[in-house]
Figure 1 (tube, helix red, strand yellow):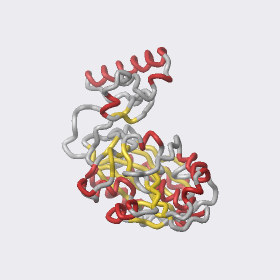
Figure 2 (cartoon, one colour):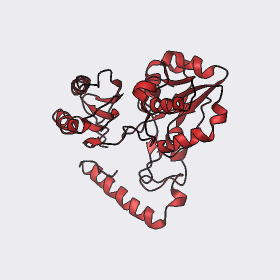
Figure 3 (cartoon, one colour):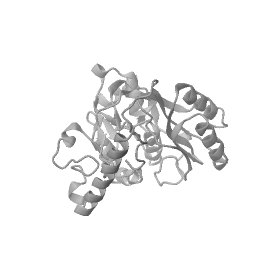
Figure 4 (tube, one colour):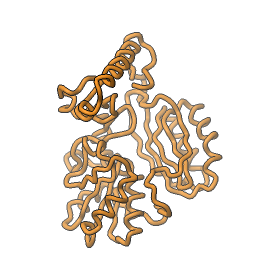
Length: 309
């Protein structure tokens, strides 16, 4: 991103709503036009099961968009987490049509009617600290690597499609226990709880608003969160109070990196990191190095950031 900062902070909204949208395809063009006409950038996903996405723009533009989506039949009650960024974290605006707004690959799961019990951030610590509660991070391993809740189980998945198989393999460990699940903004764990309930489990809970809402509302001195929370934009991570975090992204493999990983001899900006150094070839690294050189040249000349950076 360009090192210069705008005069006003950029407002970022992570939003979703599970709802039956029979004609979701017809929403794509009007939503894209609405966003582009107000300088909003980011991604919105539309499917039969609802809407999901993260967008950024001026405070007024984001407020208009939320009101606009809320007025669409079936989408009132939108779940929204707002934060700010010092720079625009997206390069363009995209509205995409999908089979699922969060891809699990399991048919006939309806979070709108069968999700687990919501737990407010203020009540989350008590639940996950209670004896007999198993706490499951439903995010992917690369997200978990820079932060999670104290004592949480990491299923070590590379995609959400792997989560059902992990549950099936660990059903015996879940029997007779309270199952508390969480994710970044609430959408994955809402669908995960609906899946786990479909297997016959009853004491299933999820963090309302996800990690983002918890970090926004729970003071750092009372928090059971450890590390930073990965976000899918150029901020890379956020911490308590939704302040921008210190993690950086490896531009070769897109893995978030902690301070210790950035200090590794296997890290070279735009070229490699400890997660990809041993699985990339010298030819790969030469190609990445040339791309990084072009990115740095564009920044030095004050040109727009390289889209592939």
